[in-house]
Image 1 (cartoon, rainbow, N blue to C red):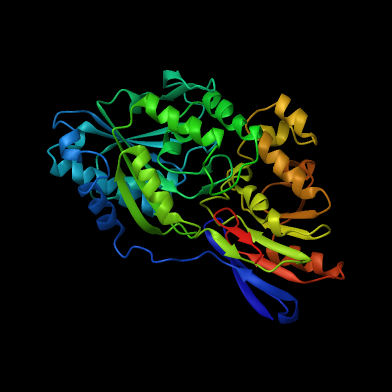
Image 2: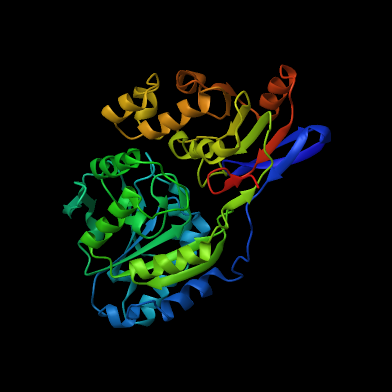
Length: 412
């Protein structure tokens, strides 16, 4: 038997697979993680791309807002925010003039663990920390994009004299690529703006890792311009969420450098023709709710054969994550999902597509009455799910994908 460990929420779970049945384990490329994330990010701030330094951009008495995406891992978020605040302090901006805004537009609820880690950082102690969520009434309209998105962004960010955004560069199943641009939209935005922008993903095929000609990506960048971002900090991570590199400066220039560094590191080789695919969303970075976890199904779709069983590991401690996953659970047609679009509609489409010709077993804390209307069968443990599937299948060739939301398995 081979013991395989997979991320699940804030911990890991294991499954045992007979060696004769195991096709392989698909894991992210670790790359060369930074040994000192604080210094790596600070160094990027000292050498900005196509931009003045923070000391040149920000006046000592200015009110500064620093925005971070609320899906960042708490440790990396603390390093990044601390680097920016320390650099501001060195440039003569006192901490009482700085507001740290945590953008939770991707979440239905807040993220207390992240707030606690930020508050516990020595450099960030006593800093004013504002937590924004998609339903917040404290938003300011800054304009309308060319696609018609009425951009409403957290007022604590827009009202500052200087605005700095921190984002993680990785693949995305709406915009192709995340980065500092997605810290503005969706992370700092109101629900209506998020819904309209995300609905653009139905305009064509989204290719994870590709932002060219992606309307959602273009909409997010345009929204960032409307807000007026003074400096962007782009954090390039590997599939485990570890910092590989950082770039600071102009939003689009740093985005280009970050994407070039990311390259195709998210593409990982995989065996084809599996009868069973066990895929983890990737742990708490992605599986805090179902809305953010189901993209692991989209990630493995290129290697799923008809008739295979997919076992999806996603804890979903925060629940469904978007009302559309409940309201539209019985909708099967793409045209109807487009017509009735709301947050969660495209996630429903991904689920229904995966279920055409395949079974999907969800290992989750979600109650069955929420998950089963979508077509899932539900198990509480990964071992129980695998045992049940293998007992009733003749074909048992099993492929394991450990980080389904941050990697794209490919067949040679």
